[in-house]
Image (tube, rainbow, N blue to C red; front, side):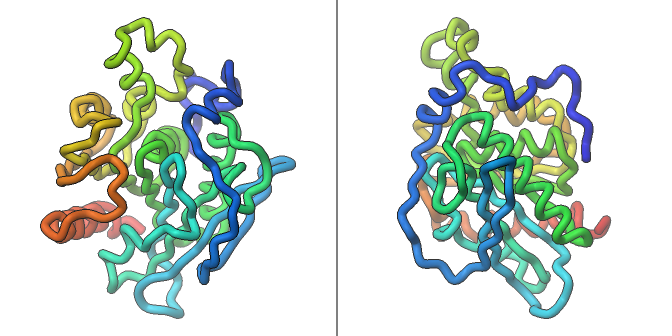
Length: 263
């Protein structure tokens, strides 16, 4: 396990923990039929759900495991095979996370439980698939979760789409005073500066929530090799445009070429 840098905030101590959970997440628990493999990982008295799906040649040990973190309303049961569907010749698995409060994951949705949940999810897949290279894919709120894991664990690569930097957004809207009320753990730039694995940042040109200029400030501070793919669309678009899909697929292949040979 990668040591947590001493200057990073402890992710289990926040003021307004429940309040931040309500502000940032919109959990749901309704049943969604799903053919994926469900795996539940305890987190103290609570749990996270991981929904697993394979791609590529069957029967082989996976070369790549992607831990996927969704946005504020996302449900793992509905998640696609992005990004492993763009590496069809590779034996791979995607494990999409429902953190406490979502679906069948036990517990309440708070900020500290979110961090504890993604910590537990990462450790669970690293233990279950010890021979696979691990990527973390995060969209929106999941983007700063991906940066957090890149700073505190050792994934081989990350893909971050439309990262929400809560601290940066607050400062842009209400000035520097906005930063003083934001937990340091929600400063995506802080996590980015301490992450060193290769990264692919996907930035939507019409993102009205995580404005491209704010995302760029996060990217500029990233501590490792970072590639940027600018695409059309808005913050919550589920799919890329037909023009952007092949560009994204090529960027995913390049990321694998950068890290795959070291597995």
